[in-house]
Image 1 (cartoon, rainbow, N blue to C red):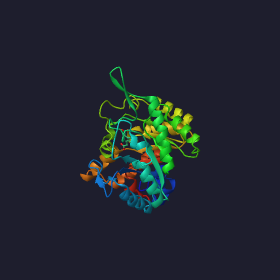
Image 2 (image 1 turned 135 degrees about the vertical axis):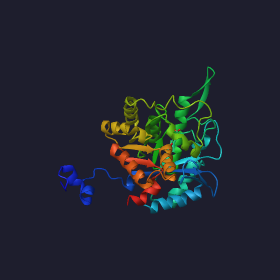
Image 3 (image 1 turned 30 degrees about the vertical axis):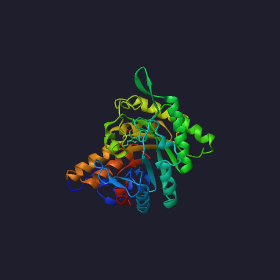
Image 4 (image 1 turned 135 degrees about the horizontal axis):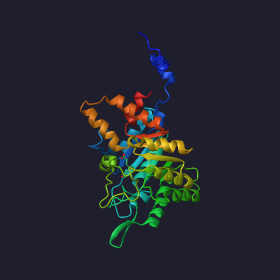
Length: 327
Ligand code: PBG
């Protein structure tokens, strides 16, 4: 038999037909590029565990944002590395904070991008935890009410500085509701919230903690991040966040949690975002540097898999390099 005769192989045999019947194609408009904004001037620090990714001061960040825009990228997610960390993470609340200052400059210089901002405290606190810590019975625990109050303040100051979408990443109970309430109260009700609803206590965040300097000085985040063995609670978390006012729910990390992306997509009628995190990026980069993988093919396959699982939005460090391939 010279020619294939099954229906599937008939469709696969022709390149144009293959493209026509392809169900999932990643486009640059699906992608969001994370950026690490460093205090100071003329700083462009390579992150050793994330080849190709830099901490940048605002001047370089503006140049980088312009390049991203040129490549067709339309959205970035900002993380801040402040000059000073303290117990409260005060920089994150200040109108003169690193993110607020960066937003004002970026919005002016590259107005065509949509700026999403990470709303959390772990990059700003001296102890590296995602809120205000207090001592109870000899143990350091999160002061929930104080943290919610500061979350409100941080959210409002981001929006006043120009944030187009808030991305609360701390998975603090009631955090989305508190931010939504604050937005309504300050006449910012139009601002969308993308909540890190299903954020797992994952070892894949390792390189990010080098990038943003956010490793907890004591303890860990297992009390509020999810156990990788669980999936029902992802549905519960997402439904709570949606009820509290989230517009987009996020799953993080992406690759080891494609089933969770798929579950949220089938369970809810809101867009699902997936965060293709630092460790997932670094694995591909490390293998490619050894010549063990075809880097470009693996990156496109990876992004396609995340979209196929159900992600409408993909936050990925591959965004900048992948943009030209996806055109
Ligand atoms: C917390 C935050 C983290 C990441 C995004 N937001 C770190 C953490 O939860 O420990 C990780 C992203 C990545 O690994 O790329 N502000």
